[in-house]
Amino acid sequence: MKSVFRFEFASINKKLAIIIGALTLSACSGNTDDLRSWVETIKARPPGRIEPMPEVREYKPHDYASAHLKSPFSELEPELETQLQALHDGCDESVRPDTTRRKEDLERYSLDSMEMVGLVNNNERSWGLVRMTAGPAEGNVFHVSVGNYLGINHGRILNIDEQQIEITTLVPDSKGCWEKRTVYMALAQ
Image (tube, rainbow, N blue to C red; front, top):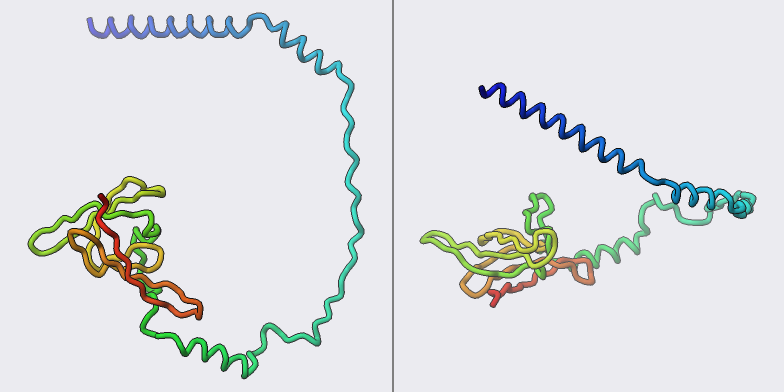
C-alpha cells in the first residue's frame, strides 16, 4: 500500500511541475510588441560619432649618464656611517620587540578597539575579559591573562585586577629607538 501511495504522489508531483512550467513559459511568451518597437526605435537612430584615436607621441630615448653620481651599491662614507652609528648607539638595546615570536590573535587590533568587560578568577589564576568594540571581531569577547600580547604596538599584559588591565607597549620614537609605555585598559561601565 505504501509503495502505491508513493508512486501516485510522485506522479502527481511530476504532473504539477509540468503544468507550472507550461504556465511560466506561456506567461513569458506574451505580448512583446512594445519591446520590438523599442528595439526598432533604437536601430532607426543615426549612428553616433566615434571619437578619433588619441595622437601617439614619438618615443624619445634618454641617455642616463651617472658616472659622476655615487653608486647605490657602494659602501657608506665613513663620516655618514659614524653619524648613523651615533644615532643607533643612543638606543637602549634591551627595549625592542621580539620579532622571532609568533604573534597572538589580539595583536591584529589596536587597543582603542578593545574594552575590559570583566574578570574571571579561580584560586590559582585570573583572566581578564576583553570585548572588541570595532573591526571584524566586533562584539566578540576574549579571555586574556598576564603575559599575553595584545594591540598593534607589541603590548604585553603585566597585571590584571578588578578595575583594569595594565599593559606595557613598545613604540618607536623619533630617533628610531623603541620606547616602553604603560597603558591601562579600564573596566567598561
